Length: 134
Image (cartoon, rainbow, N blue to C red; front, side, top):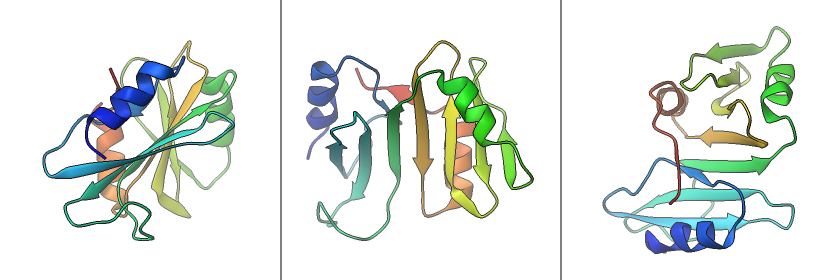
């Protein structure tokens, strides 16, 4: 799918959908589940939609009181926090470092960034690269 797919879905959705913006030579696999979870997966040139190969994926999940829920999920000895912009809170689990979860104040949405490179997933979050699809 082209860049228009995430934008088309965002136009039909009431809440935000997060991503890191359009990238050259990428197609987007966009999935929305019945419970409102939205996933944007960045597929490199030549990759087929539906492939089992893991690629950068940004998930946006409706979660009431997402900031508090995300902070509570990070309690315990397995979590590492990440500094984020806009007063948000982010963490990853040492046992699953390629999945970073975050939320912002006043939003009822949790965001998850997955990348096969755990370092890249953390850099996307810490650098403030996430934005809403417009």
